[in-house]
Amino acid sequence: MRMPTALTDLCRYPIVQAPMAGGGSGPELAAAVCGAGGLGFLAAGYKTADGMYQEIKQLRSLTDRPFGVNLFMPQPSLADGSVVEVYREQLAGEATWYETELGDTDGPIDDGYEAKLAILREDPVPVVSFTFGCPSRAVFDAFAKVGTYTVVTVTTAAEAQAAQWSGADAVCVQGVEAGGHQGTHRDDPHADGTGAGLGLLAALGQVREAVQIPLIAAGGLMRGTQIAAVLAAGATMAQLGTAFLATPESGANPLHKQALTNPLFTHTELTRAFSGRPARGLVNRFMREHGPYAPAAYPAVHYLTSTVRKAAAKAGDAQGMNLWAGQGHRLARELPAGRLVEVLSAELDAARAALSLPAHGSAS
Image (cartoon, rainbow, N blue to C red):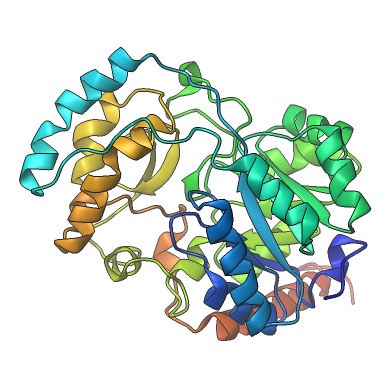
C-alpha cells in the first residue's frame, strides 16, 4: 500500500471519517469511506493489540487505499478509589434495574499502548493518530522511519505547539462541538462547565497562528458547506464522526443511530457520567441523573459503567446508553458511507463555487 508523504496525498477528497471507539468505526465503514475517496479510520481504543491487528488485516482485504488507525494515549489516574466506590454505590440502582452487575474497575489504564505501537512499527499503516495526549519524539521518529504519517488530536494552541515540537506531521483540531470524548491532553476537572472548551472556528484560528504543520478540523461538521468553511479558515481537511455514525456500515447500535434524529433527544452535553472523562453525547436519563456526580476517574468509570451500558442496549433502552453525538446530530443522514462522501464532496464543490462569485452588490 502506498504510504503518504503529505496530508493531501491520503485521499481524493478532504474528508476524514473520525475514529469512533466503542464499535462505531470498523473495517466496513473505513473501507467504504476510503473507496469513495475519503480517509477512513479504525479506532484502536478499547481494543486489545491483537484485536486492532485483526481489524487492520480485515480492512486491508477490503481496500487498497490509504487509511488510518487511532490510538489512545495512556492516562494517569486522577482519582483515588474512594470516589469511584462512592459512584459505584450511586449506580447500584442501575445495575438492579438492568439485572446486571457493575463492572470491575481494575482494567488496564494504558489501553495496550506499547503493544499497539510495536505492531504498527513492525507492520506499518499509512496513518496513525493519537488522542488524549502527545507521544514522545522517539515515537514520531520511529513512525517517520517506516513511512507512517502521524496526527495528534489537539484542543488548544499550546497542545498543537507541543505536537509540532515533538514531531507530529499534522494536528487534528477538535472543537468543543465534537461528539464523543474531548481529546484534551490533560483532563482538568476544574475546567468542567458550560464554558469549557473552544469552539472549532476559534480553536482553528488560534492553532493556525501557532503552528506550521497541516490542520484537520473536527467538531460538529455535517455538511459540505461546513467543510468549505473550515477549509477557508485554514484547515487542510475536515474530520466527521457523527455524520458517519448513522450510515449502514457504522457499527453503532441501531438505538444509537435512531437517537441522532429522534425528537426525544433535543440536545447534547459534555458529561463524565459514562467514562469519567468529558465526552459529548445526547442527553438522556442516565446522563441527567448521574452526570453531576460522576468523578474525574477515567478509565475506571468507563469500566464501572460498561456492563450497565451493554445491558441497557440489550434491553432496547436508549436512556441507559452512552449516545455519543456532536452538536450537529440532527443533520445526520441515513446514506451509505460511500454515497455520503460523494454528497459531501458535491456540497463542498457547490460551496466553493458560491464563495468564488462576486460579493452581493459589487460592480460587474
